[in-house]
Amino acid sequence: MPYYVPVLLNLAGRRCVVIGGGTVAERKATMLAEAGAVTVVVSPAITEGLLRLHHEREQVVWIEREYRQGDLAGAFLAFAATDRPEVNAAVTTEAEAEGIPLNDAGEGARGSMITPGVLRRGDLVVAVSTSGAGPTAARQLIREIDEHFGEDYEQYINYLSSARAFIKERITDPGKRKNLFRRLAETDILTLIREGSFRPWSEAAMIAWVEEQTEE
Image 1 (cartoon, rainbow, N blue to C red):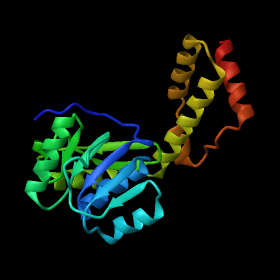
Image 2 (cartoon, rainbow, N blue to C red):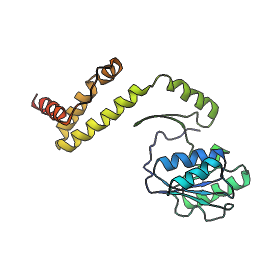
Image 3 (cartoon, one colour):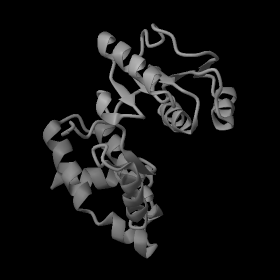
Image 4 (cartoon, rainbow, N blue to C red):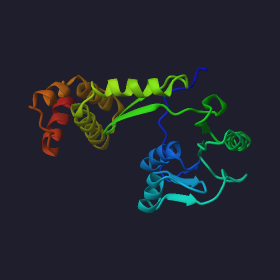
């Protein structure tokens, strides 16, 4: 089945519901919490990792009981992650009726979305999916990609992010912004980082660089 990809969602403050309390539910809830979502876990029992997450993060709520019709009310996203197919199917039915995007961890094709394997290097996010055909293969691909993207990429992406934010703040003309973004992309910062010779620019140096580029 073809899927629409990629999509990176801003979940800050949004209610996301995970039905289930096992290791799969823990993985889903952890990623939601890290994205800033108000994460609601519905399950009579949960893993130690989920319990720790619940205690450590105020926005992670544990409803200590079995799933009930209506538990998805107000959800932005939902995840059916129990070990009982009939429960996951009921959650899927509710999500479809309410128009809530849902991932069925037990049967991906039954839900309206699937979640890819993810590699993070600071602001760099690499997602790998086999369209539900082989989660194990996706994890193997992530491990292989991980070998090629070291900490140098994290430093590079973080610098680009701060530099672009600086340009957006200082330059209001769309044409000049576009030109500066192009010049920034043409600067071989990654090689300098790998050689150990790159030093993040100070604000004064960045201002000087912007002025030099806009005068040309």
